[in-house]
Image (cartoon, rainbow, N blue to C red; front, side, top):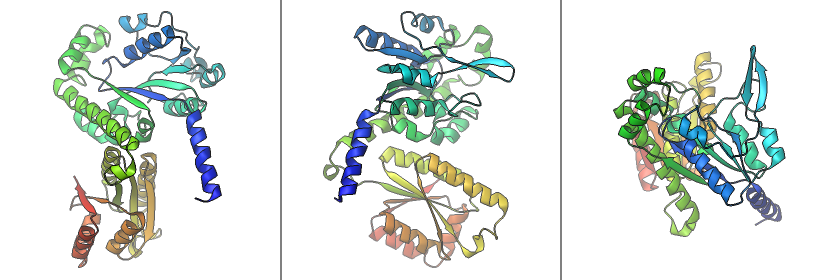
Length: 373
């Protein structure tokens, strides 16, 4: 190993050791008990002599949860005057200055008030971790970026506050707070989640048994994939299965490219593998030859792929199949992901006479082809 690379590797190890540990409680919905569990853990840590402080907590004035604040040191929030109102946000700098061993930070997906240093609370948390402070946080399954469309299909709710999958993947520990749909609905009816005036609306919308069951499944799957990732990262490479490398192929005409990107992100997350998004620009798709709206969609798709942890590859070629095969060879790709046959990219490949060569090549090189719905 060259001296420079060796030095950089050692520096990376030092910086990693200085970072705080990150624990995330995850649940299928509001009211399962994530905040309650975090505060219970804070009391346990405090009794054991650990310097733990509340950086930001949202009890929603739930009696049992709110009572747990007694005896816990709370870092005052930062007051901000915004649009004629006095609002509060977590004081990140105060947390870093006080340097507690552990800080509790609720609602990881929260969007900060305009004018804050960071746009999102998860970015605040990363800053706190970089300062060497351990963080315990919480998030609901519907706030994970790659599950956005699944959650919308299940619940009919278009969740606006989301966190990139990479944030959860950075966690040293992910704990699922699980309840049956019956128990969760019982808690709702007892007034332990929302005030009485909001209960009928909640029962008619988000808190339907069939929806809760599906969201519960998503949460369990997510935590299971985190466990798989942790196990694989601790097993020597020569004893583990092949390291997956996925390639999601999109085109400028692909109206559902976001679906392909998100599903590829989920596969990469499940297999704890690296992944790329490939766009092949044909002579007909030069910047001056495709509509501005398509160019905008492409840029947005590239941005989404980057946020989800993909490497974006853009190549110019008149032969899409050849371009795919070259990237597969260069990046040692193990799985190619494309859309269903009605997606334009698949049609282009299928219509060429060398489609059989693509399949033969993938078969010979032990590369899987996944057609995403």
